[in-house]
Length: 328
Image (cartoon, rainbow, N blue to C red):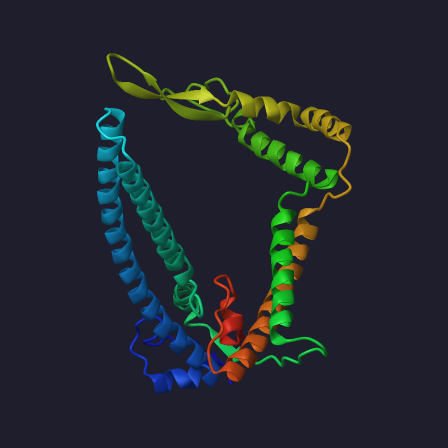
């Protein structure tokens, strides 16, 4: 039976109990979420400690740099040239280098520490957007090919995922074929012409003034409002003709023919892809990426079970694959 997507205390801070969550997710998924939350708290605590140490190292480094500056001033003033002074300066420079190296190590450690078991922030956002949808659990089998290890299979899947994302991003850079360019150009001309349409309907109506006398009949020309400076600093709305649109309205066919000729002068790229082909290719790549994500998760869960620990997931892993669900 389709189930409602759970939101629990480990994820969105809602009031669902662990027992209720177990009814929504598979046991392996629930364990993964709990492990991610635990690791997230540990990393936050370690990051805070590292940050405090980085600040302390910065203060020590500043003190050493102050000492070094004082010695350098003495040397420059000719007040100190002996071997002991040069040795002291060298020692201070080494200490500054060590402090700088330790600061960088801790900063790198904090940066790496953000890589948790799963991307909890993405999971929270996913649940907020989809918690009312219906879904079903999907568990994918993971058969290890002969001669392969879990690590090598996962590495190959991730290589293909990178290639998939690169290929999808590259679709936006491919040019359009002439047929699509013609359509885009004609749509733009038609849109301008529609705004420049001159209404002839008033010519068919009899207009009379307040005394009942027939007045001149006239066309209705398209206008737009703009503000112009009036008396003093006041601005007043003024109706002005839509000259560009009127011009396009009367000459649309000629403009289209001229632009078609300009477009044809450009040779069509052999890699050109129509909008329809682009949409279809994106859908194909998206489906492949979701399948690869599901395969990766299946092998990672085997690794979790074998090691008794949780292997970190990619920060951009597809959440439905992590939760082993698909929407009904």
